[in-house]
Amino acid sequence: MFEHELETICARVEQLDDCDKRLLIAVAGPPAAGKSTLAELLVDKLNTKTNGAAALVPMDGYHLDNAVLDQLNLRSRKGAPETFDAEGFLSLISSIAANEGDVHYPTFDRSNDCTVPNSAKVVADTRLVVVEGNYLLLDAPIWSQLKDHFDLTIFISPSLQVLEERLIQRWLEHGFDQSQAEVKAHGNDIPNARTIVEGSTKADLQFTGG
Image (cartoon, rainbow, N blue to C red; front, top):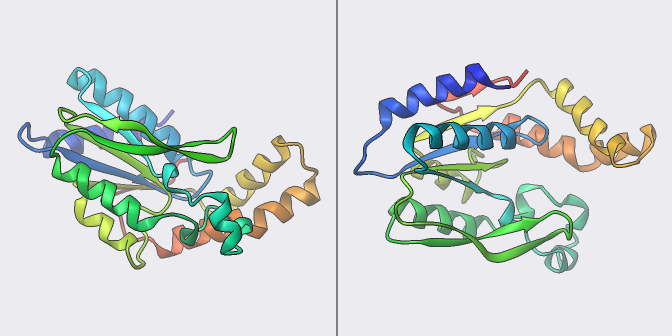
């Protein structure tokens, strides 16, 4: 899976690689595009080439808490740009890019639908950091500042039709019937996917993901 994409990305990384500078690589795309899988495979491949000098930083730890979303009446829109702590995430990426020591960050516990503060870290000697998330290239306030910190940007997305099919299938696999799955997907996931596909700036490398 993603063999061609990984070879293309690694070739670009090798062109950019400078042992005196930490490199940040952004992997962005809509839900169900395959970006998480691509990012994980990329880190594994980079680690085989660099003796473990790469790390993965997901954006998911910056979901706003459900209690906050309830106060904002945004629980039904969880996953949309406004349901993330964009300022906090920008601060994290700025700190990682500055490389002034170990940087702790939160992760997301899907089984309990909550963030876990300070549950992961990027250590000071990590030379390649792959950042993965939906809105890394979004052309919107705060989000648009992220791109200044990335040395290489990657965007992965099949067509909106394929995304729709995959997102509905996700809900079917969670036990919903066809009608319920379509309502769930069209109510939040597909609008978010459209925002990402139509509102993201162009990446250095763009893939359809099959």
